[in-house]
Amino acid sequence: MEPYQTTSPVEGRAAVTGVDADRFSFKVPTLRNVEYTYPYFHDGDARTLEEATDIMGRLQLGRVYEEQEVNQIVAFLKTLTGDMPQLTLPMLPPSSNDTPAPDPYADAQ
Ligand code: HEM
Image (cartoon, rainbow, N blue to C red; front, top):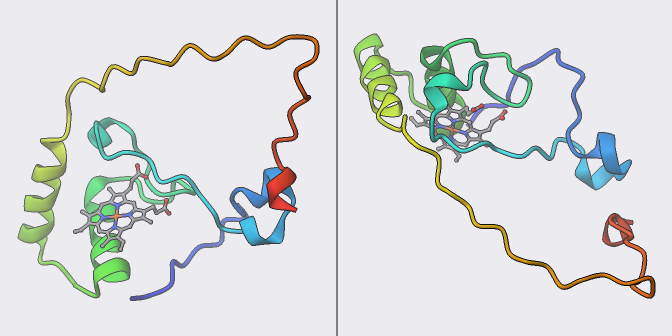
């Protein structure tokens, strides 16, 4: 609903790929354990969950929350604290000397 205002110079994935289409492309982290993963947003600009919630409400939803509403949403976010899912990584097929070399950004050109 509103643009994100920042003076941060971070430019997202383009800093790695050099591809302009990747500018301002960021990975959004899980909200699991968000209580402990401050500061928030891609540039770490929001120091508290209250601040992040206020910003989310205004920027993403066009809503200005009362303090009590912010507190209730933050209380909900804190219910997301718990064990991280256990991930079992797959066994990849073996490589050999004849395996083609990786070219990770070939599709991004
Ligand atoms: C009341 C509703 C919402 C709450 C409480 C909320 C909460 C949050 C929080 C706490 C983060 C920070 C995550 C982190 O950095 O670890 C976040 C990030 C984000 N949320 Fe929301 N969110 C809400 C609604 C929305 C909506 C409606 C959208 C999209 C339509 C959205 C899209 C995003 C995106 C793209 C980010 C990453 C922003 C960045 O890294 O700069 N959120 N949200």
